[in-house]
Length: 376
Image (cartoon, rainbow, N blue to C red):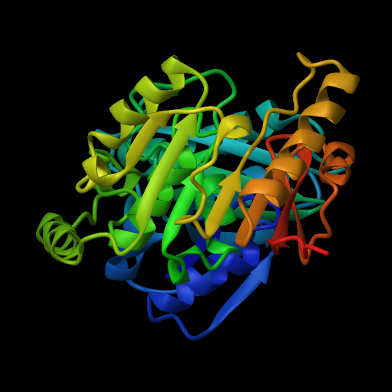
């Protein structure tokens, strides 16, 4: 089967490495996606293990269409009995970028009609639509006149890991956090610190990576579980194997924040993970920090939103750079921010810049190899 793993802009290479680690040798990197072939076992493993994937689709047909009638006829010609039972519900998700098809809701309507009419001709009745919790979620992507129809095997987005029970305002996406970490070499370090941890997404994802815990092990539902070909026994075996692979952390993990609410949220979210109690979660102010001697890896996602005035942002980022130079050297420091101008105010020379997207905000991940100042 054709498997399409969707991701965020800037994480395609990271995702391809993860897919390679699942045993896939041949794959194609596309825009915000990696495409490869596989069986049900690989499909299940992809949903369970891929940290930088948003959702896993299974392609069932692709064709060209020059108008709505052609779209309808070709969608109707698909043998829907293979994918959808009469007693099951379905929903259609659309992604349209075309001069021919200008209304995504109308595209969904035409494909829905095609499926309904297919069943009326074959069986005299049709399956029902359920937009809230369908048994089968169908994805229709149109670019110009190219139409791709897929089944969504994930259901909810894979960033919903199942551990985040306490969320602060503007949290970092779990998929983005994992993608950021996979760009680094934090697993070669001894001491890990996120000094502005918020609800703890970065440190939680880092702990799961280091202990080998599958990112979606806590999730109870996936889209493929209501498919006609769902293999419950195979899925249970895959989960059992994933549980057995979890190992003790090899890094000293630390998460600090000046906010008591953030510390509470981080502890609450970590409590659902094996070895979550091994993370040192402490209320501390980065700018008053003096005990950095055991920490050789620092990563942070400082605030950069419009609630802070421009001059406050400049001063804030300058202070971060000064602190890293004065009290945290030597260390490998990574800063992720959606304010590129503010990143320039750190006063540090980056050894690496990686462009990403945080939602609709253009962002950047920068690496700073901070060395101690030479005293005269």
